[in-house]
Length: 185
Image (cartoon, helix red, strand yellow):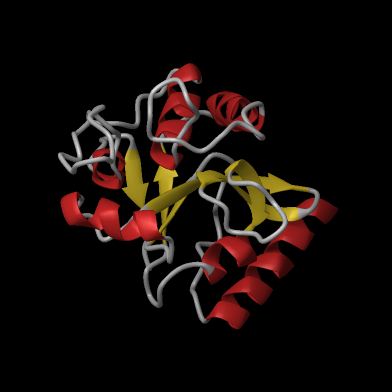
């Protein structure tokens, strides 16, 4: 009960600070998308029409609302890769008005499995190259798939020299999934 009250207060403070209306019923495993400020964000947006370049998975813990995500380095003292950031920090790296929350259709048990699967990958390298690490959409899609819920509609090649010739899961591949619903703004 105390954790639930803490989370409600944290949601209020975050929404007041960032002028962002947070859904009151966010759950473990839900997704938060943003248009980020990283160089790779611009590359992704060249082929993805969702308006987003990055995604993370929500983890509601005793420390408040955290985001598990894989990213190039966003901290001066932390190597890029799969990391856990506060929701506040995750949102602070977004372009204005580019943060959206999506609910994943999954049971509480599936949510716990997806979150634990993502947490087990903390420390893994960030990479869009197969076998060298994991990228953000791949992280959340594979975590949910291990929980028995498919949240990706497929993959797409970037078709850009020196980037990757591997098919990648892009933000629009997740948003178009029948198992993902946008929270009302």
